[in-house]
Amino acid sequence: MAKPTPKKVRVDFRKNRQITTRQNNLTRQVQSEASEIETTHRQQRVSGKGALTRRRTVMGEMGADDSVILSVNESVCLRGRVLSAVGSTQCTVRADDDQPQAGRHFECTVRRVVRTVARNARNAVVAGDKVLFLPGENECGVIERVEPRDGILARGHQHKQHILVANVSQVAIVSSASEPPLKPALIDRFLVSSAKGNVKAIIVINKCDLIDVSDLQPMIGQYSRLGYSVVPASVQTGLGIAWLRRLLKNQQTVFTGQSGVGKSSLLNSIQPGLAIKTGDVSRITQKGRHTTRFAQLRELDFGGWVVDTPGIRQLELWDVHPAEMEAWFIEFRPFVPRCKFPDCLHMIEEGCAVRDAVRQDLISQIRYESYLRLVIGDD
Ligand SMILES: Nc1nc2c(ncn2[C@@H]2O[C@H](COP(=O)(O)OP(=O)(O)OP(=O)(O)O)[C@@H](O)[C@H]2O)c(=O)[nH]1
Ligand SMILES: [Mg+2]
Ligand SMILES: [Zn+2]
Image (cartoon, rainbow, N blue to C red; front, side, top):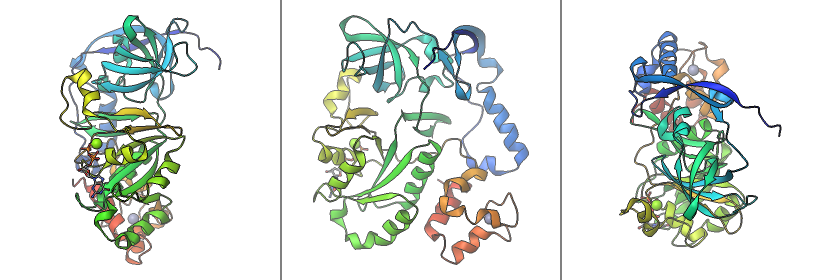
């Protein structure tokens, strides 16, 4: 790869705490195109005038998507992968296999300029990031640059984007057949968020020992027809574990889903010790009553990486506008061009080909209801 020539790049130097300019409430955005344009415009300003303290010149390249790739002295830095990040300031980084201190772990802080050039300081460094860091004594270091990300899992949190993990190749959307009950609407939400993050999704339905698996067949059929792998699993009986190992091999997979569905238990069945234990957490935070408190990368013996994440109660989608929602429901695609109105939201409009398809059972009623809930913003 050709070495980029460092250039001066002007960036906005923000106060640490930004003022949020808008809420990620889909209902508010549905109105008209005009208001959407206005929203986008406001979003680009990010923090409003008052929060900009000064501008600053840094050395770097403008990357895709307006991101700044900082110039660093590569001869003294090591390349590595962020295994876990606490609050984007304290990270554990593993030196890459082709680097001088291959496989060693470094407790790293983050150079301030790295946070300055990040669009949202909270996401400056996240688990899964590929970084250049300056190694120091006692296995400490400083992160000097974060490489552009490919494949992220993100959600809205307190009206800001929260990137849970970066550079993953697939998301395992874990739910349970029972305890907590199966929630197809939540699966659909995760499917939208993974498609939006450019990550392939697999669907895992755990705790199948608690139900009659044949009851799941309609649902398994529905998602399989859409092209997803649907794995009925049970940590109790071992159902689906071998299949999961095959799906995970040589992939970078993040396990996500509601709390209590058995993400950590599944990972431990796949490979004992894979899930984060309380002891690991307390080293940094000095606390850790929950088993899984933050995302952490783990290496698979048979090849690949997995990330266990803390369970979340509800997934707030980030930056998905009602008008683009149809794009994330792939079975709608053949029908959308046949709607009478080009800006049809497939809700109450006349001549809606998507609604016709639902009536004719060509699109599942349950999926359509998930779509409506997401467009209306009804959590
Ligand atoms: N019956 C049954 N129980 C299970 C199964 N898998 C996990 N459990 C139980 O479900 C509970 C929650 O499991 P965890 O693995 O901690 O769930 P988690 O998804 O990691 O939860 P968070 O870390 O809070 O997000 C535990 O009591 C497990 O023993 C299963 O296949 N069958
Ligand atoms: Mg867990
Ligand atoms: Zn329509």
